[in-house]
Amino acid sequence: MTQAEIKLCSLLLQEHFGEIVEKIGVHLIRTGSQPLRVIAHDTGTSLDQVKKALCVLVQHNLVSYQVHKRGVVEYEAQCSRVLRMLRYPRYIYTTKTLYSDTGELIVEELLLNGKLTMSAVVKKVADRLTETMEDGKTMDYAEVSNTFVRLADTHFVQRCPSVPTTENSDPGPPPPAPTLVINEKDMYLVPKLSLIGKGKRRRSSDEDAAGEPKAKRPKYTTDNKEPIPDDGIYWQANLDRFHQHFRDQAIVSAVANRMDQTSSEIVRTMLRMSEITTSSSAPFTQPLSSNEIFRSLPVGYNISKQVLDQYLTLLADDPLEFVGKSGDSGGGMYVINLHKALASLATATLESVVQERFGSRCARIFRLVLQKKHIEQKQVEDFAMIPAKEAKDMLYKMLSENFMSLQVGCQ
Image 1 (cartoon, rainbow, N blue to C red):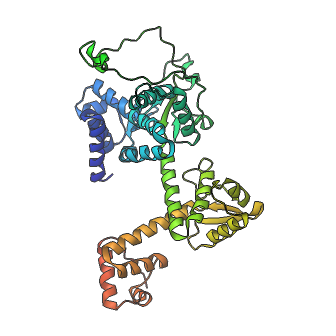
Image 2 (image 1 turned 120 degrees about the vertical axis):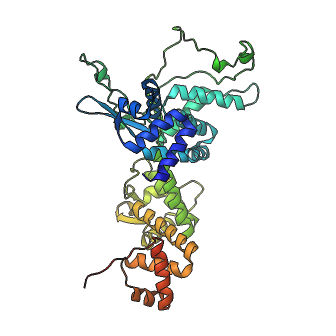
Image 3 (image 1 turned 180 degrees about the vertical axis):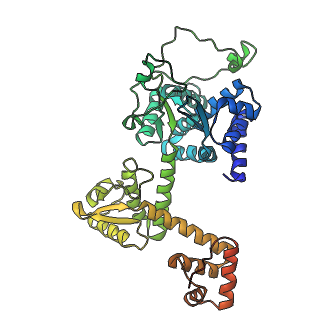
């Protein structure tokens, strides 16, 4: 990582978790994987404080651990995961636009706590929503549960890996650290919970009765309480799914700018149909037939099957190749070329940066070099129709700013 990235990680960890967690996290970022006692020795921190800091970092998926053959547990910082904390507000706002305030608070609670059981999330969110409602109105647990199920169905939240039951029943000595596993088919399986109740308001009398805020009074646990119905089943926000959503939105917006709103709605429908069945790293979406796309179009879009086929043909023939044709069955099979679409969007962004920084003539040269891959200075002058001296100055300017590279050929 660069020094700027390490400094950013340091500021993020300090802002969210405090100085001790920041010290341990940055130390792991700088040094790589290390065992517990080495971390404590190198940072001059007590073992107890290091353990608590690592618990916080593991809870929030910012540090992972691995058991080596000698039985030593080593901890390693997940730098990219720390940097994603910058996007937390965007994840929360996205959920608000898709699933209203209830979905927003569910994702916010998961991001704030790292991992939580579904029952704990539902109760926290119901209480928070009840506090914002008018007197006499409360939020039902069932309504929050329904939104949680919708988030799981669309993969915005997912189960955390857990300790397998066979590991607990092993009569031998316990391992130095538990091995966490998750079955892929159970990753989005919501447990059947009958959560009955409504959100509660925090009352000022709770503070005045003891003369101090309720949160600061010692918490007494009684054995009379019912066991947690989903104990051991923890959930977390699926950040990769949010990034997939952002990618899909960028593709839809690009199609709308290039063609029209109907074309973008067709592409949006195709992406929505494939959002769960297609991996976020896949180069293409799953093939969809023209008939399937027609049946899945929004109700308000009154276009005929013939018009849809014409739009699909136009999209498939477009030079950018956002949409590709993969067969003729079912009225024609179509896919979204995800990697090509992202490459086109990245290229367009680069071109706009060059144009803003160096002007339209430099952008013309930059676009020419992108198309040709390798090109000589004389060819740049001829193809871009720019005088030799100006072309040379522009090429040198972009070369000095690392927008281009120079390759010396052998005769």
